[in-house]
Image (cartoon, rainbow, N blue to C red; front, side):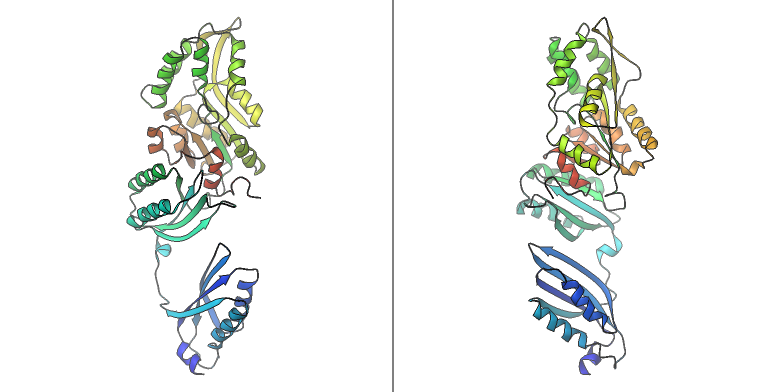
Length: 402
């Protein structure tokens, strides 16, 4: 009776640890259910096969209900299962950061492994911004190459300054970091939109065509300036295409056959197609190549610029509406509308300045191995790993996770 009197009206935190196995939580909760005790909170995690389970119990004020015996029974059964159990009185009205802040997930993906120095630097940045770490989970199937950190952030967070520091720690350690709002849309994306040049493929098609015309260095310089936002895209496109005048259309096939796909692209697209995603290619490049990639990779849509040709040679002009930065954003909205998909469920992936409106339009915009100006402006960036690393940003188990 004495234990019952001591616990009347108290709130007790119970912590259980030891080797993990099926049935532990069920067994302990079954014991608690036999007493007039409330479960007020609980959390559980497993690290390297070791369980850490905690729950908060509320004892009512009835001195005669023998509810204090629950701790004795829990201790006994925990011991039988080879587990350690401890408990202490806590404040029932405790207010923690996760109760008041917005929920975010920090996703970290390394091409090699996650290091202690990276975790130390990342955790220090979060602490400096008063961001509480609630949980850390390894999400790569075998080696420790990726993790998710569940956080709660203050409503007054300076997100721009935080992003700059996260980008710096990502660059220093060559580990990609995404800071994603943990809402219903995070794991409920339904459409992926790619840029083509230097995103879906590891080349700038117009530069390759220019090499065939003997004006490669000249066109590359214009391309570089356009991708960094130093020159209007429409102007740069017309200028570059004018230098392709006289190129035989048949020679474009040579370029197509030698275009290198970005590492991880085929596996990434195969995975998301299996999961029912729609996939589109929206490019400031050319339809000859975009349409061929659409067929090769099984994409649902492709949009690009049309090169004008007469008598089997290029005229040096483009026809129709130019697929520039604004047009890319418009096309994202049109495809989403066509598929009855919310923009919050769209992921856009690109590398150049002309991709920024498209990245901003999508619920998740990712600057992929992008120029600095694009990395700074985009919502998220992936600069070190293959295309399949984006799966982790979407809350999808990575490659070879079966």
